[in-house]
Length: 340
Image (cartoon, rainbow, N blue to C red; front, side):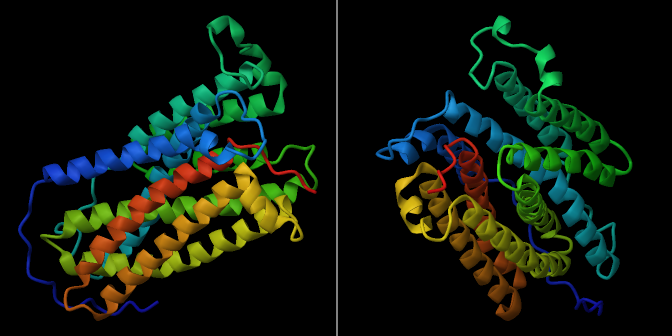
């Protein structure tokens, strides 16, 4: 990649306080992201003849929070590294300070979600009604219970490391969470579970860097809009080049994982007649919208007189990605399709 000096900065922009409309938009986005996992199982299962697992909506919501909690700190470390590269060859660190970290808050939310999921495992994969229903000690004796405890402890450690002077150390507990999720998604009773876990591992890592990285890049660009707009445009362009590779990896691993769960001769039927297939179709359509928005943003970066006009489609892209995360969580809560 070229490290040529960045052109002189664009004229400084006036700083506006967040508007009421933007706050309402954020609330609407959060509500939609919550409704997808809560209402998704009943919608996806309608007419399929499949039975929903107990508390599927709540479990999907907890997994949405868990996945988002992985994306935020992973994206901050990744995009922070990109921002330091841009800062080193533009207006300098004083005029291009990074935004405040959300990693500790996200990790706390992830820990609570992991605790909720661990309570379900401790109740025999049923929704606990009271404390006596849970066999906490039994978590150490089962594979799923041990993985659930690893996630709880890893989120706690991530929250602590987020406050340290070396936030990149968060990657170690985050890696433990991703590995635990990859192993949980492919039990030992599955055919070639290690291959499935490896595909899920790559898929989740690339998706986390893609989603979390874009969120932090947009926060950084917004913070730099008045003092270092040219650096912000350069950061968005640098991220776009890396995101193209991440999208390719997410797509490839997703296709292979789908073919493992739904063989080629049944994939078309199962996409339309199973809850898993319907949810997958919805996720693919959302990813297609994300790819289109990313293409619009990339063209604006190249051709517009003001490259920061790419901020608007990129902001829409991260909003749709939030719904993609919810759809991904929903996939873990609906029944796995039968291999015909």
